[in-house]
Length: 87
Image (cartoon, rainbow, N blue to C red; front, top):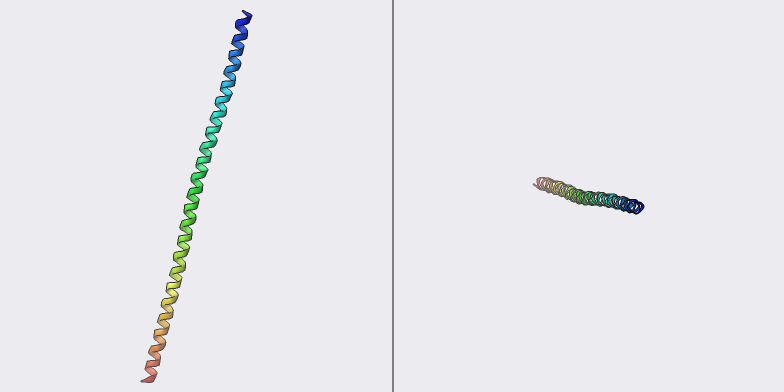
């Protein structure tokens, strides 16, 4: 009977060790899922950064275009004024 009791105790210890291993495995799986979520968030953040950079480039091009347009308009007005004076 003592041998059976020891065998059952050993089986219980093994079962507890397997439960601990399963808990550790689940914790690692959760950590991996968290890591993947953080990676996804980083990818999203990089995409938003790229979109922000693109937006800033477009704004700069728009400002440059408006500036060029105003300069062309002023130059055109100046040459019209000079033509009027010459007449």
